[in-house]
Amino acid sequence: MRVLRRFGDSRQAFASVRRNPALRRALLAFGCAWTAEWAFTVALGVVAFRNGGATAVGVVAFARMAPAALLAPTSIAVADRFGRDTLLAFASFVRGGAIAAATVLLATAAPLLAVYACAVVATAAFIVFRPAHSALLPALCSDPLELTSANVVRGLLDSVGTLLGSLAAAALIALSGTAAALAFAAVLSLGAGVLLVHLPYEHPQHRAEPAWPRIGAETTAGFRAMWRHRDAGLLLGLALAQTFTRGCLNVFLVVVPFELLHTGQTGVALMTAAVGAGAVAGSVGAFVLVSGRRLAVIEGIGVALWGISISLSGVLPYVPTVLGLMCLLGIGNALVDVGLFTLPARLVPYELLASVFGAFESLAAVTVAMGSLITPLAIALLGTRGALVVLGIPAFALVVVAWRRLRDIDGSVVHRDREIAVLRRVSILRPLPIPSIDALAASVEIMSVAAGVEVFRQGDSGDRFYVIEEGDAEVVGDGRVVSTLGPGECFGEIALVRDAPRTATVRARTPLRLASVARAAFLLAVDGFSASAREADVLVRDRLAGFTPRPPNA
Image (tube, rainbow, N blue to C red):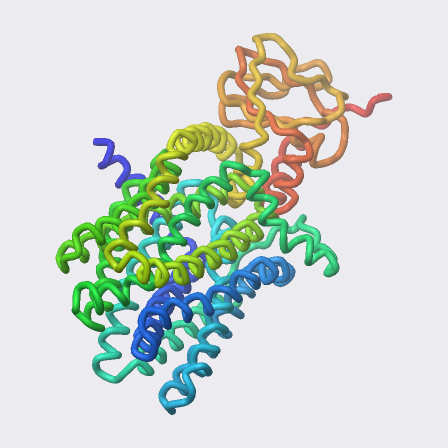
């Protein structure tokens, strides 16, 4: 019954995704971009191995990722001045152009160094795509369920892109050569850029644009925020264990088929496609997790599966077993993405979110590059089987160490979800995107008020906004009861919106349980988005039309 109920929740959430045109376009663009990435990776890996073996694969992977590690945080800091949608479109066009140039160079037998240089440019452009996209999605979503469902859909697109990109690259390489596979990746990258041009969504209005000289400080803001927000830092840190393993996998995907399984370039495509097939299966399974309450634990399981799958491939180096383990690794990849790109968006302030994801992508590039560079050395020292066994251990071991804290993180998020559910019942707050409502929920203070006790008096200064979770209250203006309020209704907004004294007294008619928010947090959220500001203005006008207090000296 629980699984059936979760499928019902997921259908409702995905219906909201379908009704959100900006979210649909953003997700489709991601699918195009990620399919292009895997087609590009497979084609480039085959080119490198044919011309230099395992060492060339590792060096090319390192060369692609190292510059990207330096560019990601700075690019994100600059990009927030122009909008995250603008950055995504620009990155897609630059990437598509660089891959197109690599295609022409390869087809005309130009020096391979020129092809690899284009690959570095394409990767540097793409390195900012995922963090900017991850920071954009919360602004397109209205509640935690929609954000989780959007990340599940994105995970599915990631998985399908891994599978289709790998298979398409293999087919094109077999039929027309590696240049055709690169051309396919270029077209998809440019298509992603077209989808992201003029993406319709409302930017927060209250965010001041910082001065250009502060770019240096902002470049490191994401790293500092990862340290200050320890729970988000832990989740991102575990994901870095996965990205290190992914760097190792970039080499193993080429070396294992050629040197261990003896299946050649067909084996490269099969192993990569197995990862994609497992990721698709994992993403479909993640549908039942869309309203789940264990996303941190799920991420941990996903990271552990990466390590287990790599190590066991060295213990059992047989084609069916390795392909099955690559499917298991793909399932782990889908599980990691659900937690990794949902929870930090709820644990870090929205204005720092792009910087945090940019910092993560920078560190991810470093760890992928390290894995790609270390793996050929490990193979030389330990052999292919020994390298597989040893390099899979860190991811699993780190999850074991962090397991208890992952469970605690899940518990804290469940508590915040309850506060969001209370706040969402209020018309003023309903239009807010998830980053704003999540920040409000984090600042909520729960109050209990006994029957007959006043929450505040007419003429008091306004310092808080209130939502009734349980009980009834009466509004007393100029000595008479003018209205009553029940669960799901709010009060206290007039003094905050109009910057005026309290217009009436609010008294508990029955015992009250209230969710209260400080003035600064309320105004930051409501004034930052026009839809909420309009709702607040309508509510204030309606209430003042029903009762207007006498002037103080009347």
